[in-house]
Length: 428
Image (cartoon, rainbow, N blue to C red; front, side):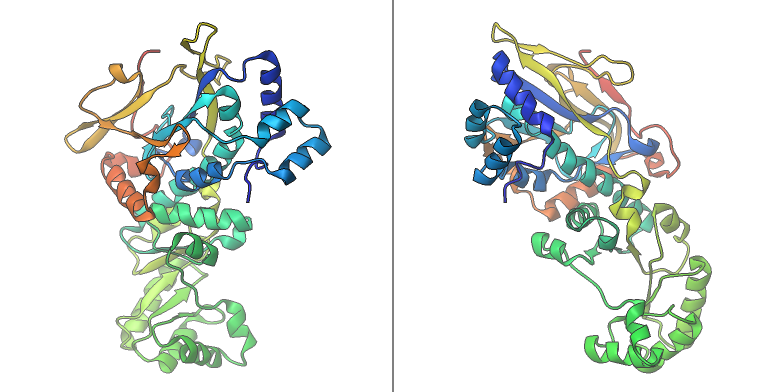
């Protein structure tokens, strides 16, 4: 399916007008970055690039799309003909998925003619603003889960398409499973799920519901024990399943207290290996508060798919360099109050002392520290996919783990504050 209309009206009118002024074919460089980290968080996580590349490949104007634009009179007949042949022939480079970003990190750089590059603005920002926001929130949760598994289960708290995109973003930073089957199908993410409170309520008794689930899914399943009275439910769960019951799930109450009581009850009943899974509107703060509790796994819904209060990553797409009449590339930049940005095409590296990152350096390549870790890779070269585009989700998960291991300890603080690393801008 074409992605060409997943864009804003003015992207096409800009192309139409630039073609009329004779500037549409000027070589141009756009960069994606944020001026500040939303919520004054300590770091951001790059996510969505892999699926964005697929969307760009499908950014074509077919008969249906062209007929719609013609009917609405969005662009001229000449520009409609140009759109009919549109395919991105430029180059895209940027940070790897799973990499961390900070203010003014050029996480994506798009180079091509003005017309072909500006058309991609809305699509790029739609994908990256959503996925980076989810991945950043999810990464914070993973860090404070202290090695315990996290299950993404927020499909019912967002749109149907954002649900599978969010599942992918959460998985690439360390979530272990998703409840979303479409994410499982598209990305081969492990899926999990057992039963909701409605399953208990449709039966004549809690015990009958537990027995039906055990008969169907086996004793390794997870039984939901908070429909009525948790203590009674745990007792019935072990009576039905035996001491080898896989897990119980708790979705309400004062979790630190309830979890402690349930663990003690399970141990008294001899179910020492039965795990405890908690859900109930968890976010990174609640997860951090449960670190000392005998929780075995977390299920997170609303908070992860909505970026835990920051549903967009604050990314912008700005023209930073373009060709002049002499055919030379010149730096351009926006200078309005509060929304200025450094001009010029940039590279980025991360300076480390030993194994700890200390600064992000952004600017012309010849002005950056030579011994720092390079951050940018080629994604598309002159319209064709580069090797980095073949990275798997397992590759991304591994890279994120390595990148976050470089951060100083105070980067894990959940309180609002300054970015974990300063961004040093060169050549400005």
